[in-house]
Length: 193
Image 1 (cartoon, rainbow, N blue to C red):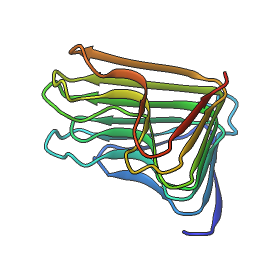
Image 2: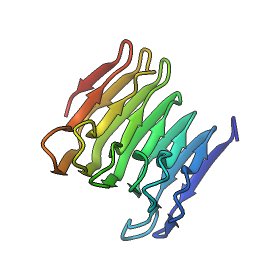
Image 3: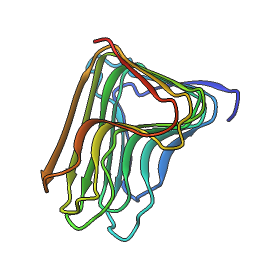
């Protein structure tokens, strides 16, 4: 709920949705995700298995403030675009974790974009202990595969990358694999690490 501060401790557990839910967690407050387990192997996994369902698939839909300390967030789709995090909120801080998006439909026209950011006057900070992976299997040239995507609705969005590992792979076709896909008004991306 709006204005509420919540910490979700995965504690080594994985929250799973296989029914193609548009998003699993909808954040309108101040949400922190962490994993206090020894192995740090907890996560959130969302999968859309129908090619006829073209709605976006998101582990987290953020409309406010989100911090991820640890966690494995994976979104997979055969229909719509797959996002681990889709944010139009005021802030996102990623201090650690693995974020992945997979699009597996060779005839599809949608995307694998683990981190999608938008909003007005929003800030995004990505720190050292972060791994982001995008994979697309599609023969359509319009399909994109980017680890970070700034949306066309962005206005004065600031993204700061202090470190991390970013991998984008398109296994079918010859177009559209990138680390950063930027759109929007007054988007500023700063890479320090």
